[in-house]
Length: 92
Image (cartoon, rainbow, N blue to C red; front, side, top):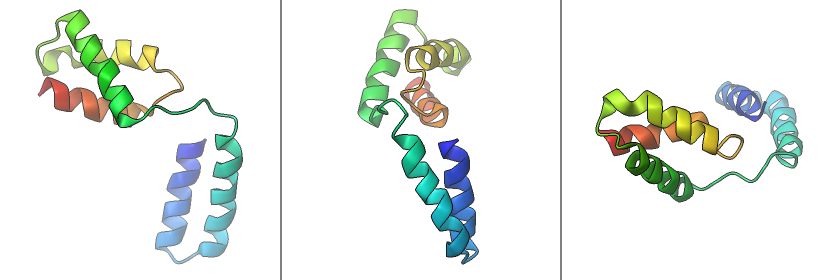
């Protein structure tokens, strides 16, 4: 829900429609109060490195396996896009 509202707010701001962006940003603030605390990129990177070492992943062919394990471990604590970016950089 937060991602949808952030995307909407960004579009509205790009179009100069601050009157429509403000309610989206306000809703983000309310929703974030109920979400678990998000990990920093350093925290995500630590989990990714530990998972790569535990699975013996050696390249991009192992990305799916690593992504599955990391996503399960960090469910609700990290954005999937951020996880994927870090996994790609570590396996490349």
